[in-house]
Each structure stands twice: as C-alpha cells, then as structure tokens.
Length: 502
Image (cartoon, one colour):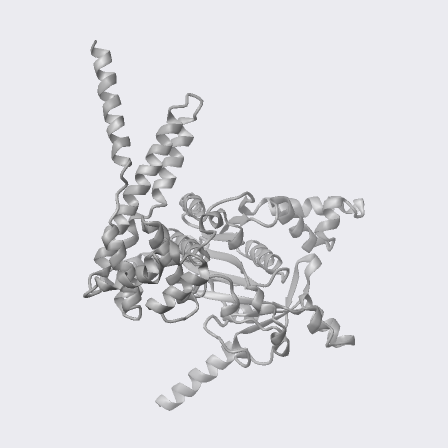
C-alpha cells in the first residue's frame, strides 16, 4: 500500500505539470502594447532598443509574430514604421486577414498612451517566453527519458545545451571598472615579463601573415569578429584556407576550430597539399598524379598533422557552435583560438526562420557575438552576397561590392569588427568579355579584398583595397604591392605633427 501511495503521489505531481502546461505562460495585453508602441514611436531610441532585441518567437500569439515580421521587414528596408506601412506590408506578405485586417492593426495603437515602459513590457513577455521554452524542453526530455534505450548522459547533455541557448543573460549588462581593467592589464604585463625572463615564447597581440598591406590594414587578433563576404564561387573558402594555413605555419601558438559546411575535412587536407605540390585537389582526389610524388606529399601531410585543428563538417546550429567553441577554448587557455564558420547560410538554424530571414541573421550574429565574448577568440564567419549584387548595372564599376550587397539584415554589417568584401572578376563573364589579351589574363587572376567596413560608395576609397594575384586551383594568393603604404603615410603624419608641436 505504501508503494502504491508513493506512485500515486508521483503521478499526481507529474499530472499537475502537464495540467499547468495546457495553458502556456503568456501576456497577450503586453504583446499588443509592444506592437502598438513599435508602430507609434519607431524612431524613439528606447523603442529602437527593444525592436533590436525582439524576435517573433518571443510572442505567444501567432498574429503578433506575423506583425513583428512585417515590422522587421520595414526596418531592414529602411522604410518608415507606422500603421499604414505595417498594414501594407502585411498585405504584401499575404497575411493581412490573419492579423485582424487594417482595423485590427489600428486598434493596437489606440490603447497606448505612452511608450516609456516598453522595455519593462518586453522583459515580462521575454520571461513568459522562457517559461514556455523551459516547459517545452522539459516535457520533451521527460518523454525521451521514459524510453529504456535512451542514453541518459547524452540526454542530460542535450537538456543542458538547450537550456543554455535560451540566453537568460539577455538583459544582463556586463560592466567593469577602470580599477579592474587596469589590474587585468598589469597582470598581462607581469605575464609577459615573466615569460621573457624565462625565455618563453612571448604572446602576440596581433598576428601577421607576411602580406604587407594585409597586415597593415587587417588586425588578426583575439576578441574580434572578421566577416568575409563574397559572391558564389568568388574564392572565399580558398582565401580563408590560405589565411589559416599561413597562420598555422608562421605561429606555433594557434589553434583552429573549423566549421566547414561546404567542404569535407578530407577536402581541406587536399587543398593544403595542392598548395604545396601544385596538383589540384580534384586530381589528388581522383589519384591522377605522378605517384613518384607520394613521398613528398606524405612529408607535407606530416607537417599538416602537427597543426592544432578540429574539423566539423556536418550539419550544426549556431548555438551548438557556441557550446563547442567554449569547450575548445577552455582546453587551450594559453593559445590564440580561432573559429572559422564556412558558411553562415548553411547553418541548421535556417530551418527555424523559413519566413523570417532577418530573424535568422539576428539570431546567428547574436550567437557569434556571444561566442566572442565568452572565449575572447577570433571569429571568422563566411557569408554570401545577394542576387542584386550581380545586376548588370554594376558592370560599369567592375561589380565592386558594397556592404549592402550582403544577404540578411543590418546585423551582418553592424556586429563584426571588420567586414572583408571579396571581388573576384573571373566569375563575371560579361565583365571579362570587355577585355582581351594581357588585360584579360591579368583580370582573370585578380582578387581584391575591400576592408572598408563602413564604406558605402562605389568609387574611390582605395586605401582599404588589397590586391592579390591568384592561382585558385592551387589555393595560391600573392599580394600585389602598391606604391607607398599605410604605415609610411602614418609615419609622415606623425612627423608632421611633431614638427608642428615644436
């Protein structure tokens, strides 16, 4: 009887959890207030701040998710956000009736007397969202746990990982004082002095590649996000492979976590060998090469073996990348840790944002930013241009890309410390047909990196351009030196300033 009583009590407790979940936590009135505020005062700073944080899944009511999608679309296109524009956008999206029609949208603003409390309202609906997600994840895992064949340790790891992705620290502001910041710097100086006195390898602040202009313009350093964007087949993957292998060869304290969603791990090794023996990776794969070179290739393979690289070439989500890279860095605390994500659009998160591409952009970059903050590593995501970048009208400017050519929302342009835009002329047939002879040959091998993160014009601003001559088949990039250098100009400016001071 006692055992039966305990079982019955446990069952009642379980049933109460399920009963509670039949009416998920929600705050519909506050959701309406937030939507109404966004349409009334979209240009107010406190409203803009909330709009940046908001994601459709934060809302419980489906019509509110659709309205936020419409508002986010208007924001991305730099269109005004008000009752009329939101109504028109919902009409374009084909869901105007689902959100209550024009009248239903208008009524949302009629109850708003002030938007000053919008951040407080958002905190409440975000807490409701967290409650719903915790219930969902818990019930899902509870169902799996009832199966005797379940690996409980894998289940526990999955449970913890999913809970971590809810990001309860969304509102937490990480602050530091001048005193603590100075203590960190003094500790760093002490560490350098200690290593120097013991003849240890000194830690580097910025890592160079041996490409003069690249090293002048781009800082490969810890605690940064450098996004590389280019058109399909422009050579982004080949370029990042060259960068990583040069770093690994030149600096012994580098570790790389390589998320390769376009090339297999075997292809990455073949590309390294191709750059050494000048046999294409394709020929290496099909074994169409002089077999007398095998000993030489085995030698380079052993060199590759010494690199500290972890490869992941299977489907993965951005939140899983954060978890993995944090663990990766925890095991390599004294090294320069680099995360490569090739490429963003192949991440598994895409499936969650089929009707909200801006939400996908914000979600992924939020995770990469969180990854950088947690690890202090260098994050290098690869990304694509939109189809409009290859519009015929861009022929006159040599298809020179600008920041707005990148797919996705403003987050991709705003979050990285630096954006490198790739221009590889040989992929544009109509442009190549304009040239013949030696000019055609040069252009076919020309590869330009534009490091001007905030530049939006299509002409001028050559200071941020880095020119390469390439042999793509062998992953070879030779930087083309230009007259003068940024460093020389800096020294001249400093000398002029000193003379004026005297």
